[in-house]
Length: 354
Image 1 (tube, rainbow, N blue to C red):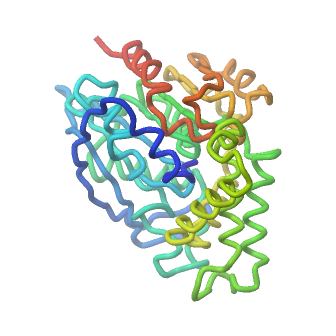
Image 2 (cartoon, rainbow, N blue to C red):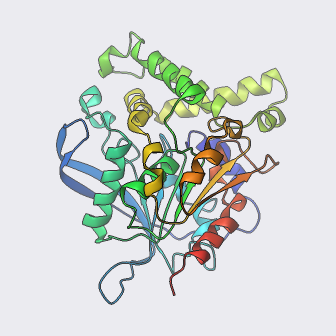
C-alpha cells in the first residue's frame, strides 16, 4: 500500500539522486467497460504517466514496455520524483527511461482515473482486482498498442496485481517482480484491519449510504489504522519516543490525509480485494518471478510462511526477504528503491533476450 506518502518521502531523499525527467501524462477512455459484476460503464477513464518511448521489433511488437503498479489509495504519481524515478529511471539505472518504455497507470478508483468521488458515489460499479488488471491490459493495448511487457512490477496492491498478471496473461511478459505482497487471499489480520475500516465507514450515520456532503468522521479512524499498519515498531519508536511526539506525528499524518482522502474512494479501494485469490493459478505463471518482501512488514509478516510455501508452485519463482534494518520501513519499504534495486537489475539481466 502507499498510505504514508508524506512520511516516506524524507527517507527516500538522500544521497546523490539523479534528477528525474518529467513524465508524459494522458488518459484513455475505455469504451463499454464490463466489470466482473456485469455492471457496464460506457466510458471508463484511465489516467497514466509514461517515461521513455516504445520500441518495436521487426514484426511491430513493442519489446521494451515496463508496467509498474501502485498500492491501495495510491496512484502512478507515487513513482514520480527523485525518491523513486530518480533512483530507477535515470541514465544507467535499472529502468533507464532511455532504454525502457515505463507505464504508470492510475488504477480504477484511484488517482485521476474514474472513481466514486467523481460523482457516482456509491453508485459507482463495484470493481475488484480482476477489473483493475483488465483495465490495465486495455490501457496498454488501446493507448499504446502494447501486447508484450518486458517487466510487470507492483507494490502492495500493485504486487498483488502482478501475481494476477502472471497467471492471467502468462505469455505476455518476460519477468515479474511483486513487492510487499502475498500470493493468497486477503485473510487473517490483513482482512481484520481492512474490515474494521470498512465497518467504521458503513456504520457511520454520516456516511448516508455514500451520499454524504462532507467527509464522515470515520475517515479519521481509517487514517489512524493505516498509519498503524504501514511502518515497523522500531522505526516508530525511534521517530516518536515520547507520548507527545507520537500524538503530534499521528495528528499531522491524519490531518494531511483528511485533506485529500474520500471515504467512498477508500471504501471501494479496500473492498476491491474481495476477488483476489491467486493461489489456484500459481502453476500457470511462466515468466521468471522475483517476489521481494521485508521481515518487518506488518501486513505481510514472514512468520506466516505463506510466500515461502507458495513460491514452490511457481516454476521459475524465487523469494527475496529483506531483513529488518535502519533503512527498512515496514510495509512501506517498497517506496525505498535503494533496498531492492540491485536484485531488480539482476532480474532484468537474467531475463534479457539475446
